[in-house]
Length: 250
Ligand code: 13P
Image (cartoon, rainbow, N blue to C red; front, side, top):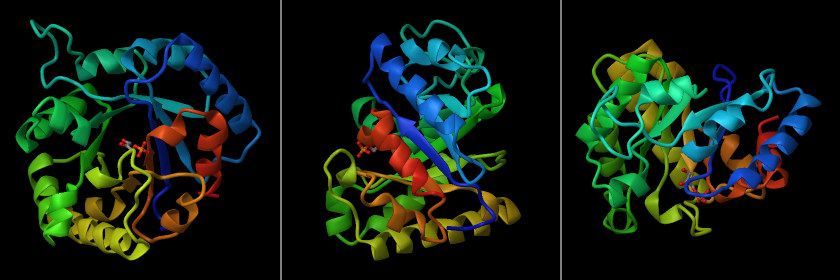
């Protein structure tokens, strides 16, 4: 844990949750109300269909909200897409960009991801930029090279506030996690690259770990100096699980 960066625990609900699922946010909100959360920022990125309702549940909530993707443009003829400005209007303060599921499902390149980061800056919301190697790339010993290249190409030259999320593709939704040494090595390498490129800003950028982060493994990861929080999928869907990961920050 790096005292200079307030850790963030971010739930990515992916394509999960109908209106009933808002009950989990209500439950989490009640628990957080009674907790000292100075040591951790809590964010939930629900599906866009739930974003407005979630953000309006309690205007004094300690939970902030984010979108899961945005288009590079502000508005226009892009059926089915959502702009960063629309997310902001709906109550989002963050947006996930370049998640490996979108890179795979929608063919998003680093260049497209970079455009989405710029769109987030334009709308004044914070991008959570996802990077991570595939199982093959790790087996070939290319994990560091692949991740640092994605980092380099996905981030524009001029940055404002960004969050980086290291999510090894093979760890997402599988219950597999890298060894603590491998997580440490990767996060340290990302920190060095950020400082080299952005100086002091690179020192302050939160680097989150994502990929099968669970109540039983979060603490060990969050104790690493350059793990400044988590991007949590499955374990963010139930308040009772998610709160245990938030508690691991305390
Ligand atoms: P899981 O926590 O379900 O492995 O998902 C991680 C993830 O992809 C978060 O963006």
